[in-house]
Amino acid sequence: MSAPPLELRPWSVCEPRVDLDRLGATEALFSLGNGYLGVRGTLDEGEPCVFHGTFHAGVFETFPLSYPEGGYGHPEEGQAMVGVADATPQADLVLALWWCRDDFTEEELARDLDYYEARTVRDSSLSAAVQAVVCARAGHVDLAHRYLRECALVDLRDLQEDTTDGLHLASVAGAWLALAAGLGGLREDREELELAPVLPAGLSRTAYRLSWRGRLLRVETTRDGTTVTLVRGSGPVPVVLDGVPAEVAEGRPARAPLREPEPLLPEPRQPAGREPRA
Image (tube, rainbow, N blue to C red):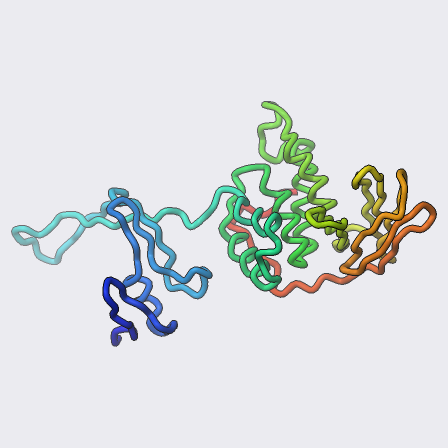
């Protein structure tokens, strides 16, 4: 294999373009290390790649070396560095896709979610609510529903086998977020309240209430569409329903037909044994 096309500059080596046929060589050339930790130089996007690798100096495994014929000075064992698991314990990075939504395009959200879903091992019961919200936004409604069920049933079914030590109250509270911000598409980080409801195949109706600037609203979604009703307080209340501005007042609910989700990528896969558990 010939050397990858590189540009040599003072104090730097640059790759002017990506050459997929030489990806393995450039990953090795652009590896970074400080004597304690080393990381292979894979692309920022994570894909495509030849080999993800993060290594701690001094962490290795040994194996015996055998020879057809012994000889003086031949080493008796070899050593191989052990890579750090290519995984993240909980959905912290996925949370950024929710809280910093203006910083990501729809395509970036879809690809980032696909990448981290395959690497989030969910050691914390707090992850499911976050994943439900972002999966719903990416159009993976049925997967969002499965994460919602995990939030709601974590103690009722003792999914983590530790309910006798106490209830997972934050996870149970996350079930409301998974419903309202996930399947309900609730966004409250702008001037007007935003709603973008969807329904998974396993549900025919969702309904919840929320307080918004001193008013109590009720949001109900069925196969026929979504209805937002003013339960208490003065109107009209401006809302954005599926991207369309509307107003809700006493006796004048806002309505919108149910939209069909359009995911940009197939439903992401989780690490083996780390799928939603309810």
